[in-house]
Image (cartoon, rainbow, N blue to C red):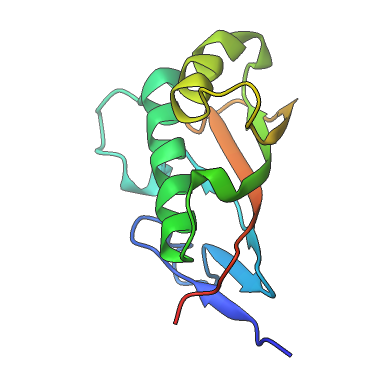
Length: 134
């Protein structure tokens, strides 16, 4: 029986809470919440990052997590996305197509609304890895 492995990455901290970015067991990688912006890291008085920038950060963080677990974007099977304004999917779709350009090989996706605030987008994902990191 394979043991459960916590996956930690830089930029995926949950304050002082002892929570990993993701968990890997028997090749199944399941993330916690992944954000495109971290309100606690914002510079006071600086403008909040817009949706385009938050999408770029979100996908970079997703890539970092799956890479830390020993996989790649091609291993992701589903991404659940929450957006402050789901009507702005064209911004999300631009980043989606950059990371998943092949229409025959894209993960499933679900988008739902979330309360508006400094975080404009967040996601959780699942991936199937062929092997676990040593």
